[in-house]
Amino acid sequence: MKIQSVLDLKTVSQAYIGKLYKPDAVKVNIGMASCGIAAGAKAAYDKLLTEYASKNGIHVCQTGCIGFCEAEPLVEIFGLGKPRIMYQHITEDKIVDAVSGFIAGDFNKKWILGQMKDPRSLLETDIPNPLDGVQPLDGIPFLEEIPFYKNQVKVAMRNCGYIDPDSIEEYFARKGYLAFINALKDMNPADIIDVVKASGLRGRGGGGFPTGIKWATAAKHHGNRYIICNADEGDPGAYMDRSILEGDPHSVIEGMLIAGVAIGSSQGYIYVRNEYPLAVKRLITAIKQAEGYGLLGENIAGTGFSFNIKISTGAGAFVCGESTALMASLEGKVGRPRAKYVHTVEKGFRQSPTNLNNVETYANVPAILLKGANWYAGMGTERSKGTKVFSLVGKITHTGLVEVPMGISLKNIVYNIGGGVPKKKKFKAVQTGGPSGGCIPERFLDLPVDFDKLSEVGSIMGSGGMIVMDQDTCMVDVARYFVDFLVDESCGQCNPCREGLKQMLEILTRICNGDGKDGDIELLEEIGGMMQKFALCGLGTSAPNPVLTTILYFKNEYEKHIREKKCPAGVCKKLFHYEIDPEACTGCGSCARKCPQEAIAGEKKKPHALDQGKCIKCGICYDACKFNAIAIR
Image (cartoon, rainbow, N blue to C red; front, side, top):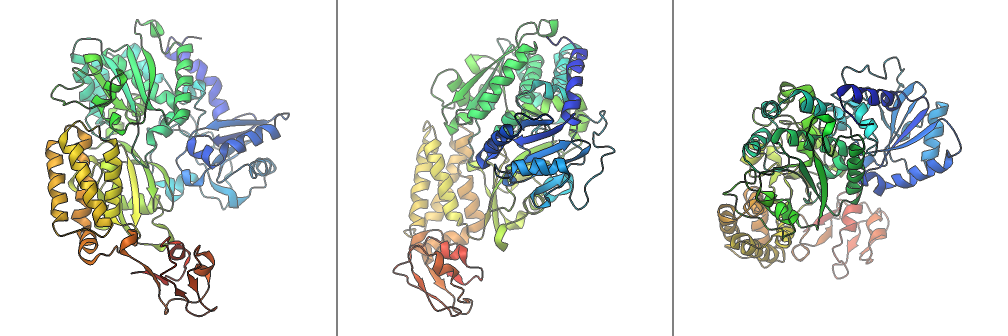
């Protein structure tokens, strides 16, 4: 069937709304994004298929990541008029018992994360809540009310974890492609751009440039215009774009189609990391399905509008996340940035007008057109509208993907959503914006998270990476780590970045090895300032951020490394040693049993001693001690 109208979409989707929300049997949704598969979801999926292969009444389905990666494998079970139950840590050995228990009404509460109150997305308020009349289970929290999800608002990730990413029909059932058909049939390009402008949507790839203005500028230049999706997500610890592509690829394709109508383009490209094989696989499937329904290709819906999408896989160069380097790579050249005195919206890919946005930006567009600009602009702050997806990782109790309104405080994300720092350790800093982002100390935890406020304290929004650090993190070593990463990823084209990063790394390595000297801090600041002013591209101008912010907020650690030859956090091995505090040691023997060098000895219930000659500073004793008796000196 070729989709020709809104009526066609509704006809196809109607048959799947029931299957999606009120199946005629038990439905088991297993989270099969990369995080779930790594935690054992694929084995659980295969086990369940084998167990129920010859039995009716069980629908075993895959879905994407619902965000709570720390609780994977996540399995949702519903049907038979019972609540929708989300189970956590359901591996191969638990899956059959979880399903059979659900059917029998014997719920293992230890395995349950929560029950769902409303599975609809923000776009489906005209569909009755399928759980109306369903009796909730006593003593089990609603998923929407547990701390991890309570403050989240799912727009870009509205379908992740709810639909089968390989089913375009389930995407239809969640109002998929309705925004595109409406835009194609009932709106002119200028009207589409005006809606995006009025929404206040800014690019989610890092730069934060207003999306509507970018579209309008590309539309006014003549030539073969191109639409490019930047899915070259390379920040350490960041996986927002990957999860959207793995859980809801059609939202990105639909966003690109709408952009194509808006600027008058007939060709789109998705530049995705080769390290994301599952995302690529699901994109290929989604493109073929969209072509099958006539939503990609020639003369779409009989309107004369044509649009095709090609996938290009990058080779893993971090610098190709920069727009001009990405376009050079897409052309088959070495991925190197160029100066932007001529903008890519005028002369970009193949020297033609090009609109480039990232995955999350495109995923927001269909929702904005369906719900309206005022709806989207009603979330967030004055200059940073809508929501933002962050990958919350590091020294945090609950790791995962969170989508929150702009303007939410760092404290709310770290402590309310993330559950704070584990093991009762003290929060030290949070780094936002990837390897070129800044490290924000505890005193700024009440800072609202938006483009401008993060910039004021020396950091950036970036694509959405958020790494939490605790008391055991050495900020000098953190700066060294990120600079080391950037040295390898710099294209080496301009002197400030190439030589500046190399010099910074040499200085930081020397400081971490105990060979720092007076003047090193000032030299790092001088090099960083020079790079910010004179580097060619955004990678080079932002690369000093980790160094400059750690010096600004944690200068005392640099001074201790240089002047006292000590690492207070106990990370730089040449600058510390472990000691056992005899007053705090209870003689439990936990440290001695776990020490790989047998460097700890002592009688039971009496203070132990540590042999410095045998100690390799592995930190196992420090982590094992429950009484804070292992001290860093």
